[in-house]
Length: 417
Ligand code: AMP
Image (cartoon, rainbow, N blue to C red; front, side):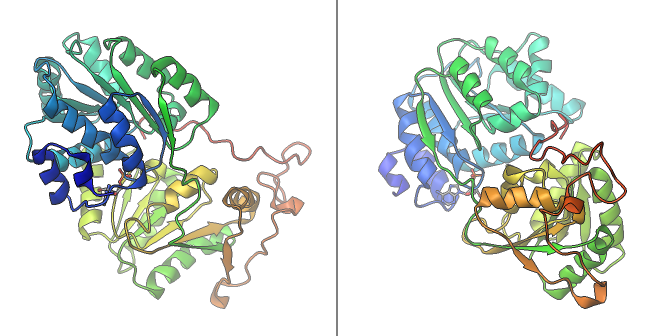
């Protein structure tokens, strides 16, 4: 379906064309008419489906079409992370470029100057505010935020926000909003707790499911079964075997991100790292360098696994097996975006084998295991059913009776991530 079929305001249509969009994606095709009709919507859709424009476009169009209170915030978009807030704000800027619709991103980690700007916008009114929960609460507590003319609330990546412990903050923000408003909720997954929250917030919502809980077919998925000590040499080998445009390496902890980055920096590769220990400015700078190609290998924690939109990532390398299937899909979904093809490689250590087996179950297929090159010595067999391969119960690491640890349990993500 062509965007022209929506009959958007011509200034908005100009922004759509300037962004290079012609055909609406499935989520856009379904969500846009509902939002234009004034319906509440709950949509199960991940990053990469075009969900951001699915809510921004009808929002901008409605703001252009109807009288609004210029001394209030008209639409509030709540998101889990600073990076996502910035990205949506950039998206918004592009689409609304030829209109007079104003927007601002409000997120933690900025300097005093950013705070003053935010305060100014929140007290004078802005059409669209994109915020992280904690920072918005800080502003609300100071008493100047103008919500009296608010018409739209959008919760993006709602499942991630609940995982990060933002439920109470979100409900506090919502309590400060006018009761009569249109609500949109986007979530990659729809666990029970999201449905509960939706029941409290949405009014007779239309429900949409764009399920891509399975990875995109264009991603070539491979895995290496390795000993921990083989991981670093193998990363170097892979990165020197073939030139990928950009490589994103995910590690499960900040410590391994730092260690691996240190090691890779000793090679000829242009490498940097991103994790929650870095100041916001530094994180933005690293992301910008990565997007522009000044750095072509980025080592990251899961901070980047969702919501971040970087084109042309040729390879996603899971240095550690992700916590669960959802994380795996999110991580490898950073490659093969738009039309490009991509490769995703996962390293599976002995104690991660069962965790990986659970992921393969979710995928409904086994991932091709590559042979570890001989120069790295003998590699372990992939035998996740074997008792020695149970996570936490490997040789010499008894865990009280050899009971397997519970898998698929995600530790709550830290708020600053
Ligand atoms: P999102 O799922 O919102 O993160 O969007 C993923 C990527 O798709 C972003 O780079 C968008 O700019 C792009 N995109 C969104 N909608 C369209 C469209 N209709 N046609 C082409 N690209 C799009």
